[in-house]
Length: 290
Image 1: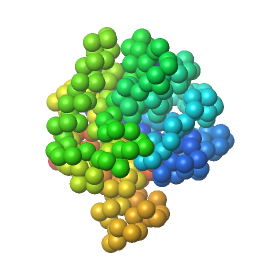
Image 2 (image 1 turned 30 degrees about the horizontal axis):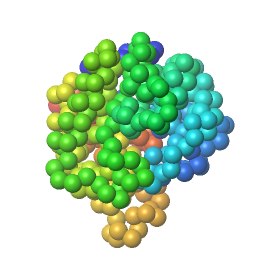
Image 3 (image 1 turned 180 degrees about the vertical axis):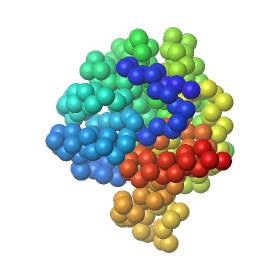
């Protein structure tokens, strides 16, 4: 399987590691660490030294309860980082749901639009949508994620019932909508949206049943890194989950990434690139010698 992007056709025979660059002061996992331009640029370089195959740059937090960021502010955060990242020789993904930002970063050479809204978002004013931007671009990749409700309310009222059939149907419909607009199947990646409007139990159901997404024929991305569900099942007391140091989520995050790959994920989106790359090499060696 391949994922076609603006500048690269990514061979997914081996799993790829997408390194996270949060240019935000309020990310749930590393807010403020890379919010300045110099820190974000240095972090891009570090992630590549650690073995990242793809960089994913985001200027707006979509953590539970996060408020919407103005377009101008998001552009001011991400454009300088994208300008640098596209010179580094790897695919560059931009985590955004705003059509104006999509258009600007694609003009700079970004390869993938990674959209938590699956191209559904609209401000009610713009005449152009994210779907239009992606459909009219000749080659860019796009990741369509499942999110229940919106960042402000998704964990206040998470999903009900059996989660995988709903997630699968949603992602299939969103991908088909794009394909009807002429977007080739190789350009589309799907993400079940761990933590986006799901309970802890539902998140682990998605991990257990993730292989059900593979027959759709699209690249599958899994984003478990440092998610609160990992803390919820590894801590003795639920009272410690919210205050748990992010480094204490490293081993659970790497474990979840490995399980996701074993259940069919082609790309894992992670903060801890070096450790994830090392773990995937061990998994790969085992499979080669089996």
